[in-house]
Amino acid sequence: MGGSPLTLDQIWSATSTFTVKWSEGIESNKAHRVLHYLLCRLYDTGRGNLINAHLTLAQTTLSKKLSISRQWVGELVSRLDREGWIEHSSEKLPDGTNGSTVWRAGRMLKRLLVMLLKSRQRKTPVSKPAKSRWHFSPRELEKRSFLSSARKKSC
Image (tube, rainbow, N blue to C red; front, top):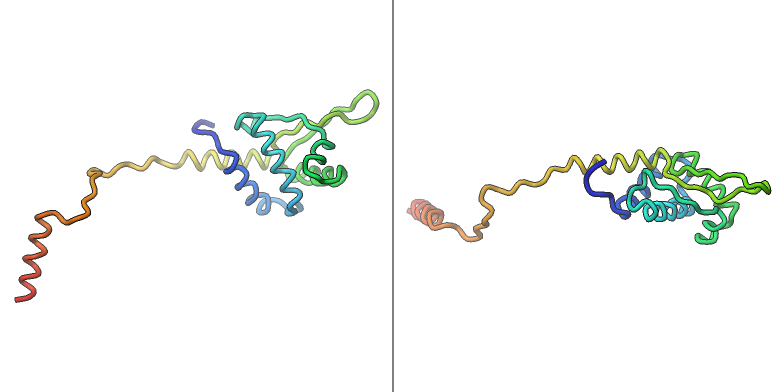
């Protein structure tokens, strides 16, 4: 993608805005808490590259970290996955239970990241003016012309 990486603040702010605009069913603060927590962890794991980052974390651990019941975390994760903000999968263990969940950025989050990166690329550096010195007081020539025009008006 080139350029400087996006900061976590930029991604956080954009996800707060666009989850409400682009998705239905994840307007609740708890859905945002789950998404933001996963964003922080994915950002840390991927060292700023969320598109290719993946994180292994059990949903039970996630529920304890966020002080949300395990069942409710499962519902919120399903909503986030259904809307495309995250992807998650877990393998079946030999005893029939699920193992730790592997988390990745979903298609909507990737769309948002690409949009943010492209908006940064379009910005062109500001060119300096030909004369970078500022003159806060009028020059001698300007003073003379102002005084002569003032004299002509008074006559």
